[in-house]
Image (tube, rainbow, N blue to C red; front, side, top):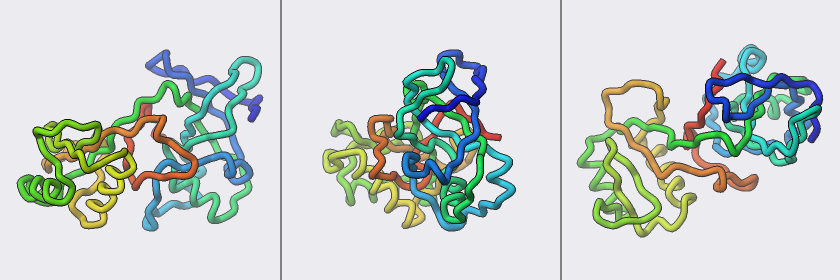
Length: 214
């Protein structure tokens, strides 16, 4: 894709490459992919989509006279707005931020624990064999203490388990920059290599910076 009308963003971190432009989301929806699921109760309105930006992760092939980006674009922030535009067939231009996938930082999205710590630990140990002593690539962190499982064989399986915990109201997503008195749960962070056009992670799996909340 080539874009000829854009503005470079001057960010606090000069190593992050990002631009603003206007994009017809509907007409380009075949090359724009979500990486997280959405929820039905999202309260998106026309006013919200017109007064906020959708953040898209891209691979820049050139950013000199024109922006040239790979035709595989991932939504970093704005999944519900994107879905609203598609569901309502809104054929219009919307403000977007294009940020290099190579420059973003992906962390596990925080979740508040809605049950007692010891009950949660017993649950994840009995259901999936999590332990403090075993070491593996995949873990759950409770208040900065990591629990590993050899029964979890890939990142998709770990986040499928997170989805189960969300459905059971064991955990509830909370912004990473928000204070809470409850215990915090995190998971092995997803990496950009885990993003795939044919797979989406559960709702609120990632906390991606820089942020462009408007």
